[in-house]
Image (tube, rainbow, N blue to C red; front, side, top):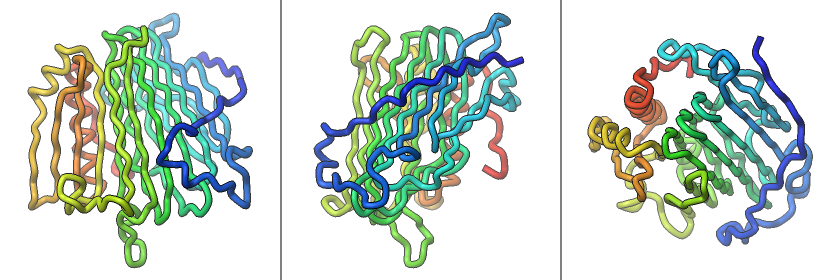
Length: 317
């Protein structure tokens, strides 16, 4: 029987008051106030080894609309890996939503985390939607965090802050995929959102800072179609791999940077500061090829770190 401990606590606050780029989106929504019940989602996941050495979801706490039921073991290449899907009972994110996700992988444990579907960001008139994530990996822990794409609708306002705390011997694979909008919706709404503010930063368990990356996309100020931003591409993926230097060197050597204009896809890789790991970016025209390339890169990471590839994606994903 799977051992799980569910100890409910008060959902932590989600505070973006220091984000200057969101200062013009602070009107209180007329329907439900910011962070109202059902608009203040919280999720806590804790993976660790049980007494038999099996990696399990030991700690689980959730607040609607965020839902996680239990871990599954379906990975054919690593059948011992617990796989968890984050679901939402509330439909798309709307203005005034505040979410927080805390994920901890204890010493020697490992896990795969994704979402059940794309994260849809609805049109917003008053406020914005915000997400805080805290991801902690202890010694020799391994995590693959590979959610489905984020789809920002017209006039979306969204901000996220992801804090990674990773032990020197651990490996974190963290990916994000951003759509330009509902690409085939009526006349299309490519890059018609108001703002996307995305920040990721990493530190060691002792607090030593490793790197920080933040991009703020405000189409009204800077056209994403400009050269050096998105150009003619529509879909953008950002992948962070925090891993020991010997592992990152091997992953880097096995990863190709390229531009294939005929197929409409491109990828690049660089090293993170302080020998923290690697940064991998993919541009494409459609989400399918981008997801496939991210998954192939994840397979390289897993082969180097764990000695197993990532299996083929389910055809319905």
